[in-house]
Image (tube, rainbow, N blue to C red; front, side):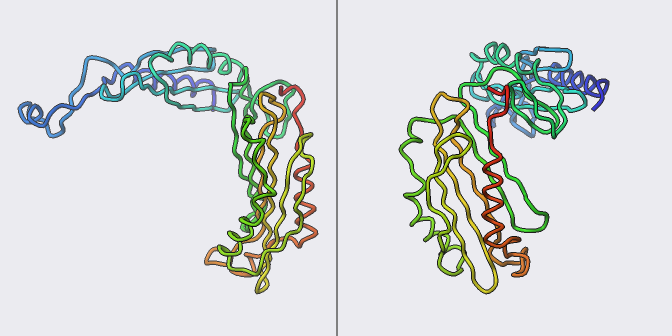
Length: 287
């Protein structure tokens, strides 16, 4: 998006929020007396509660459309232009947090910058498509990402990361193996589950556990690989991490048997898994 288009978009949103008035519901009897088809009337308050411009290329709007919403429940709309990438953000907050949210969020609004999708920045921040969201990290962070590894084939890589908690240290992936085998065998209706690996390993400099399962029947080969690293509480370089690799799927209308089978054999699946896991590392300058 160009700067001119971005400014027009932000100005139009601002005009809308300053013009529209909040509504409230009235009783049925009152609506009949007023000749209204819908029991709702406008108040004298506009939608916009607060706005801020952290930088030339960003805008924050705090607003509420209904006076009947719980007191203090507002919506935050944000817009950032990072180079030619426009980011739109939204969230809920309470009235007592309006100024705090504006003060806290303004920092990372200002520090969000453009980046090429394959560039690796050397400053702290959160990488998304076309931008680096900068600023200080929040108290609790989480991220979920699903990667389709091959077009039109059942090959999915799922990564979940979040700030580690004390309770994470008490959980063990290895203890869940019997339950995993039962659930997969019953749901996929294939042959009995075969364990390829069931062990502790190192992942991104952290202790972790992995369970690698294989299933095969009627020419369809499936792999389900799992890893969990409990991480270390209050250490941003050692987050709780759960990773899953699905290769192959139960045959159905979307995937007939020839396409449902894993696109690689056992050796290829193990190689893909180890290559992906070994590529994880803390980004220089990220912490």
